[in-house]
Length: 613
Figure 1 (cartoon, helix red, strand yellow):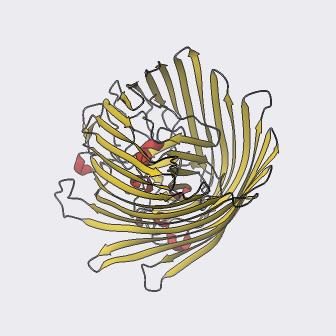
Figure 2 (spheres, one colour):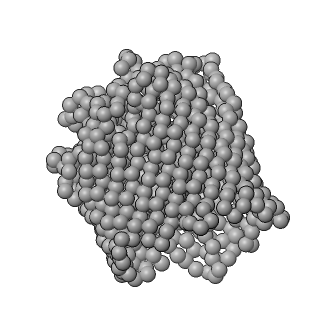
Figure 3 (spheres, helix red, strand yellow):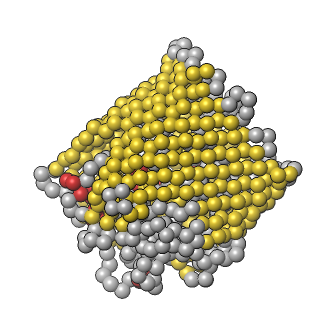
């Protein structure tokens, strides 16, 4: 079936990145995330949007691909971390909402996102894989190939992807600049000499270009090179169940200019920036009858660089080293207790000046959560409290929009959040609920009402949640729904917190048979009047209130055989003209007036074929 919303457990979600989705299947990591309740995308054109979870943006989200972190180079986040992620190259996406995990690097205040590939296992020599082909409106064309060949001793995995699209038409038939071209490739060599040993060496590369309706320059290069080594050993003793070590290297090279993908009447401008991220992680998992303890340490070094006539030169360096421990205890058959803590030392060097100014801090993080399953009902409840401190990131310290004094004056964010939820899984009905309330001290806020703009600390309160349900209303009929809302307030000046997405809901009605299914989806978004105009983050700011809207979509799929499947859909079926609240203003050289937001695609059809072997 074409997925219109993933199955959700409170506070923790695992979903396949391979399943067709609506709207049109994702071109990057952000496109995939926007199909998940609670996520929004800060749009600037056709691709490479910036993901937002519960109104939280940037490094408040910890985004890892196979355990590795990637940093873009653009000072305005034109090349977001998800711009370098192709969902079809991974198997699963895991979302941990809120500060409820300590084992995946510095504890994120909004959530942790894990794009992961699963190890391949062969009982005998063989080859398997999949080929995906997609065609759609506005020149959309994707080709994906994933192939694995191996035997009991190991395997080789080959991944390749190409995706492109032209500028799109909105609901009023206006052309919106948003074309892109991108490709990526990867190879993984895995060794499995016995059932308890895994060694993996992986390498990857990608590149692309994208035109942006909401930026003064376009991205003419999104080059990435990566390498990673993973070693895992299982069942070393009755108590020591797993030892895992991983090291990785990611190199990004990003070019922005105002002439490669657009016509410009003024002077030509170009900037080349990038980043190198290296990291390592060592962890152990200990188990007893009722307990599981995960302990370890991780380190990461990120450098940001700029290229001039003399070559590359680093202008900033971040070094993080942390230790962590997480304990899961089965109190009894119905109750589980999970707690964790970590301590990170972070140092940042400002290499823009000869004196190489530095800042450093020690950042604690901890959480505890209780999960309870009703003994006579398919109902699970949980409640957890988490605390974390987040050091300002590159864009908050060094971006020109942050102001000259930000490196000296900005304090670390401190988030205390209470997360609660439940999940019900009955025979014909399932439902879930996630809710949160948090207090953020020294929240980092960008103020664009000043010239030049600057970043400063304030205090904030946030709350909201997500809920969804599935109901088998009759044989072969399935009704699904979801609803999410985020609210925030700047306590220092009693104004709304900027860049908060409005209330949003989905209703899906699906009909399915053994070999085919079809469905319709209605998306409804409320107006957003709680704004703090000219305030926001390094990428976006509140421009004004936004109008609500509703869109209708249709999808269908057909299974020809176990190997061959077809999916199709029409997004924005009624050709609605609308704009998302989290958005950027279009630039004047494309004909946009001041503060005119970028509109979304009009009626868009797509067709995808998948062959599995």
